[in-house]
Amino acid sequence: TRKESSAASDVYKRQEINKSNWPELHSIGEECVERYVHSIEVESPIEDHDVIASGISVHKGVYDISRASFMAHVVFFVLDGVGLLTTPDFRKVLTKGDIMLIPAGCPARYQIHSSSPESIWKTLWFDLANTDRWSWLHSKGIVISKANNLDVLESAMESLYFEIHHNELESKLLAKHLIEQIMIYVRRELEFKVRDYEKNIKHRLDKLFELVNQQLQLNWTVAQLASKSAFSESHLYALCRKFLGVNPMKHVAHLRMQRAKLLLYQTNAPVGNISLTVGYQNQFNFSSAFKKHTGESPSEYRQRTRKSALF
Image (cartoon, rainbow, N blue to C red; front, top):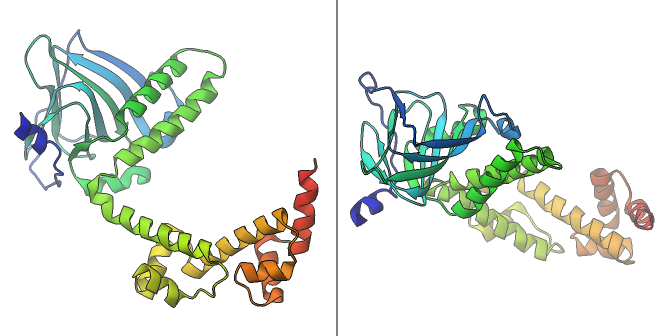
């Protein structure tokens, strides 16, 4: 129903609950088809991303999985049909386009929604290891939301399944590239709305340093950066350390050096002019900073890069 579909997009926080009476079931009927792209029996480079198992499944007839406490984070993408998720706190219908996250240790039961013989539930799923790489999923609790790139993810998984089960030309290399693509999409989808704050912060930082990059000739200070971004100086410093790995002025210096290298390679402008263009009023200070950054003086860098381009 419309009411159920609307409720299925809500975000649910994990609660402390009594798991002692939760059933342990594993019923998969003869009509169910499960194609593994990684498991104990089917090896693939996806294990390098702390994925215990993954696959594409078509559930039909009997399908009833219930776990009181599972060692991995379970992620389902619904490709078709209707499923039913039951937890100690709620029961929700899962329809095409939904993504479901059950963090490790949370009791949950998965079933085909209807008892009709014609009912199916097609899913693309991942069991993500309970390791540091995926530790951020614990804080989310049980979440049901809508996927944004489901068609692309399904296509990549189908291609990966083919490559790991067929020994075609350069299958292993292609599988490695496909896995990198798949895991990027999975991480994107798992951000959900609860991470909108972090996405907003990163967007504001990107816009700030895009502005800086457009006017590198200015004498930027932390106070000016903070004013442009509407952060306090201390908050800006902390955010840059978290999202960029360096303090604000070091990132400005990095942008200046990147522009300087480009200008040295592409133009015949004197070093003094380039130093002013990237925000250094003193050519000596620029040359000193450039050598510290690259290990070469500006003139040495220009000579080497242009010489290399000839070969």
